[in-house]
Image (cartoon, rainbow, N blue to C red):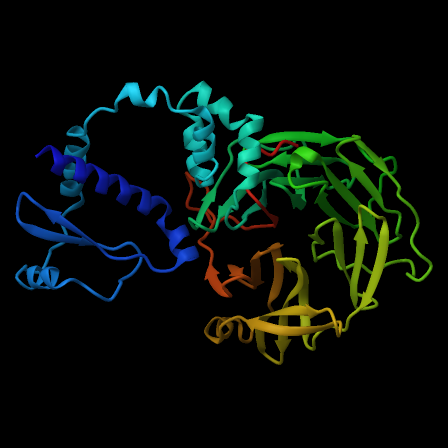
Length: 447
């Protein structure tokens, strides 16, 4: 019965992997076939699902299923005992084989694991932990296409930072235990290449951090301290953060500055062209979006978009009228396209809509809107919308009196999902999200 034990062990390990990460692959690749597991000892068939049905069975399986009595759900204690017995009967690994396993293949495999699995991998030993931080692993990780972004959010309670990160693939909140910045209150204002840019309330001190590794860097302060509101954007110099990044600061008076991580200093690249009138009327509720080396800012007057190419220093202004009955709105980016997400309020009704910028006509074209069943919940309420992430995946905070809803919208699949409540690990108190930004989780990104 050694073959039976080995088969049980294999099926158990595959099932555990599916329970952990199956939802991600099911979302990306569609339904997974149904598995039939043969119980050789008792002559029965047990079936399991991995996300869907194939719609067909062999004749033999149909006959055997017809003769089988309806299955009953076993207690969890029995299932755990059976799983433990399978693990106890597993054969030990052949050390002669695994000791010769090439380290570069380790890096190749690890770079393709989900982010949560990579951090469990780091806890195995010091060698494996240092392997994740190596340059070779960084190169491997940058070459592998990864999934949807995470969301880095801040809740302000007791005048301190409470950081919460949301993983949409697992629909799970993570709560880092160590504060990421020495300032009491910071605001996430931009992100690029797995790094998040934080700004304190004085609008002078900037911090760049990797939320996954909790590594933090305070960049030099600007020469002039400004208390007015500002818009901050961030772009990469190349494909990864290893090649450096730039952070741009833009107030309404147009006195913009750019920080270059490779030079570790701020600079003033030039003045605004005469065709763009100052002062600007930036929409500070809308975070800038980046497409390549170009940053796009939302303007309220005149209505439209202001762009700046960080590599060439060229400014461009687009006059684009907004859709009717739009209250709160923000820019978004999806596969190089400029999108607009906004809350449409007319009479007592409210609905969230998505538009795409048509480059030929410079007009907004509606491409999707929130399901009507969800919008009915907002009827008669004074709703406000805040966007907590605007790159490929949107997280929207919809608030009214005694109401706060977090919703995620996938621009690729056009799916709307409700976000579970954010609560601290040892508390049942619901955390209110104050602000946030989307970022691409990257364990190898260095500030």
